[in-house]
Image 1 (cartoon, rainbow, N blue to C red):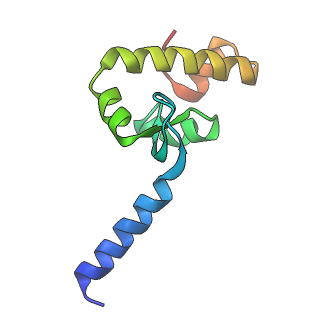
Image 2: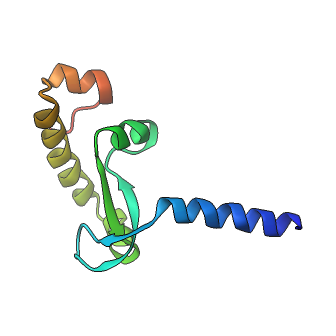
Length: 102
């Protein structure tokens, strides 16, 4: 197997790990969805730990990234949900995520 074949195989494997067949969290279409980490960057792993990941179809995921107000809305709602589910105060939230979106 040449280097390009190995690279493509690894890239395909990673892409398949990151997608799943589901109902899009925005449009409701049953299709292959991609994870959108509500709190990305350095908070990506903790987003996964506390269920702050939304699965979106590719067109909705692209549109979502074009609208900053959608990010703010989703972060507010998700922070409130996670705090409620965990029984956290704002101090508890800040200890884990280091940024308040409410």
